[in-house]
Length: 158
Image 1 (cartoon, rainbow, N blue to C red):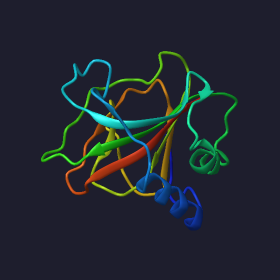
Image 2: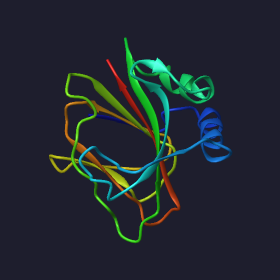
Image 3: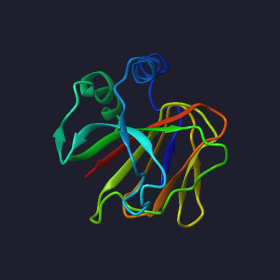
Image 4: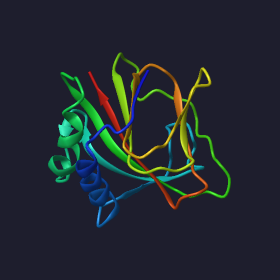
């Protein structure tokens, strides 16, 4: 696992942040993981799905983030928007795909939400932080209680 703080230069990070916060199209999703049985929800925005670009926001938001990543194929890129919860909710452990791939998890804002790995490793949500890890590592998202939103972008790539 590799954690990179200050992943983007400050001025580029600020542009990405502003584009994600103001007038950004979020879409309601009635479950967080496939096996969550609809108990929890979030808002998402897909930039790449099944290896195809599917968002008109790809160039403005994703292109600046791709530069530092080493990839040959983009499988899926999606933004996640979790709303504040009264107490921390830890969702189910999962992998994004069942085959070998890499995950990059980029935090848009700082909050007390986090990503927890099956081995107990906890990666906190810190603005402009990229966490890169083996996609076959089981992990789960955990909601925040201090800020209205937890925003991140999930990159699945080879």
